[in-house]
Length: 125
Image (cartoon, rainbow, N blue to C red; front, side):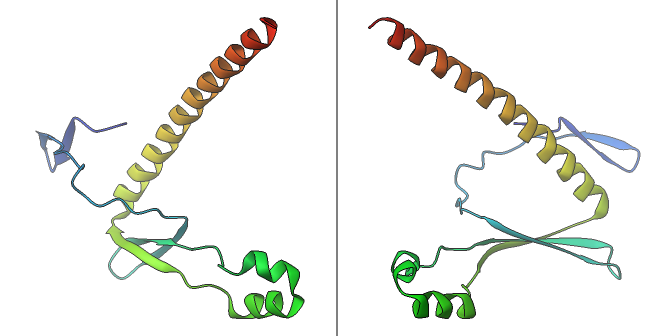
């Protein structure tokens, strides 16, 4: 996880001490809406959860039900709305990209190790 050590406020650089976030609730988000307000120079990031339609399996059997689902759509439950300035949005974008790249690198190595373990088990037969 990437955490800045210092923050600049004007010409003063202050150390940052992150407090544990373990007590904050965690919510799953799979939908994101980014908007901007040029009057206030802010970007708004809204995160939401889009549940799969409950009747999807049943709808596959019945064309009328499927058409009703297509017409009605599904509700989105917003979880959080965060306002950030343009410079912070750029910083967030770079942190997300860097963290995602690190995740992919680790996941690639973990997958390679698991494949090697499976091959060793298969060779032992």
